[in-house]
Length: 395
Image (cartoon, rainbow, N blue to C red):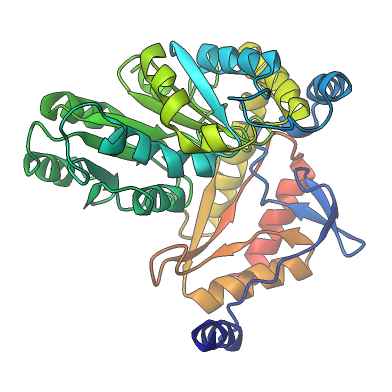
């Protein structure tokens, strides 16, 4: 255990151990209560405010009364509620695929899908274990890295959003070898959009599958919130869409969507689906309504990006180094030095504003940042308080 305690003491001694705050209420709201004090919250990924939307809450309550708070078992036994199948139908309508499968979290959806798609233990052919290859963007989420570690596949990492490097990696793989390209749709710590059309073109050229992690795009991009694939008009050309319910849709859980045959295959090979209890009925009920609102009501997205544009323009006037181009509602404010980022976050907290810092190993060394997340629920006064505090603290 010595190596564990040495590591812990080193991190604490450096001043970089995170101070995890206990929230009394409002974790998804513009005003959050911590230690009996209210703060303006710019940390929540509840982008559209659907977590506490009255219609979403009512649908959740009705599902809880009908089914209770937990499924009691896995879906392959007696936990396959009709409500979950209805949710999966709604998901496929949102992202415009033939079918979808829901998973307890987006994280374990990513950690399980790589094995299901590439590990020959599931195949009836003569492939040997380790013959498949994952080709992953270097900035992909930790859940994708964990998915690789849980599989027997090989790994090639291409430079972030670099199609030339991606093609070089693809060209070095035997054309008969199963290949899976994985990218995020929106990289939330960079506020960058993946070059998905180019990725799809290369996948077709080299016979690769494409998996997109669209956690931060579902509900945000596309005319109806269908995500990055819808944004680029690439419906039917991406093999698997992974999405999260815990961001714009305001709930909990994840999904995988694609062709019906592929989803049928995942129902018997995806270990998180087979061996985990499913999303609870109250969450599923609320998500069904949240998806309906995303499809039918664009006003929340309009309010979200109105708030984003206001903050972005004001911060640029202050000559800060801020990432983003208006596609994602996330605003990463670059501070580079780890301690500077931690200090800035603490100073803002002392002024009644909650914005957390990201430093190594969450981001590469010397790229520490604060991630500002406006939502559709923030009002003008919240934004003005933020701008005033930033102008007085960070420069």
